[in-house]
Image (cartoon, rainbow, N blue to C red; front, side, top):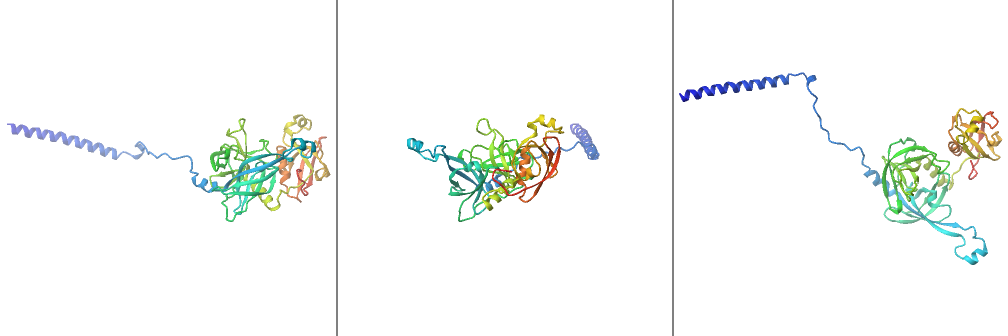
Length: 379
């Protein structure tokens, strides 16, 4: 009897187990047969990726090509030639001495170093350069260009120096990554990272000639003359100035574009100065500063530059007078005086400029102005 009951129980259990297994199989078959379009999408987990590229290799190549520069300057006293002053007060009759600290970029393997003019100063009596590895060299001032705040030095070395390849600053884009390399506060070979904040900054009031690159890469005193390098390791600018109310970094720095710096380097290395053409136009002001004049002349906007000072020369011979408004150069409209200054300074000697605008008495003019040999400090 017990044996029969056990057999019945086993049969019933086997029946229900078969039902369960068959049900699971049917469910599995129905899932596998479900069209792909009705299936929920598979969730793919991806490893997080970094948004910042590595600049380790770029810095390793560029840092050795940035030098530390110190300049001893002598400021001439206005009483240097006064025997009374020299007799009673003694001291250095030439005036007082000061020191300037900055950075420089090695632009050729044979020892040419580009820096800012304000780093070496107008009265530099000696310039010392500390190269990568702590090697100190006395440098010769090859030439300087105050209009762009650039100066070129030369050191004599027995071996080839590391350099940074030139980049094309005209291809820079806002928000592009850049490195600033220099010696802030005499902290040698410091690298900071930032982006290009803006391009074509002429309102920085640093020089009337350069459209600066603005960057938020940390630039501090001592960075002047250092390198601004793109993510390909190319030199795209020479760090020149900061905007600061405290004297330190506030996220606004300015660099001379490499295309300007490269041309100035070539001129200084060849001739010891920058040769520029002369038209006789000495000073310009933006029309935007004189809205009443713009209304009087019925100008459609405040673009253009007013000739505020002119001397006898090609421009005056062509009929341009003080008070005239120049609106375009070679058929291309200009926005302000600084843009026109750059056009005049960049014009090759021997070429002709087509200047068009409105004269002070309301007449339109369109004249050809020859560009003749340069006169220092004039355009």
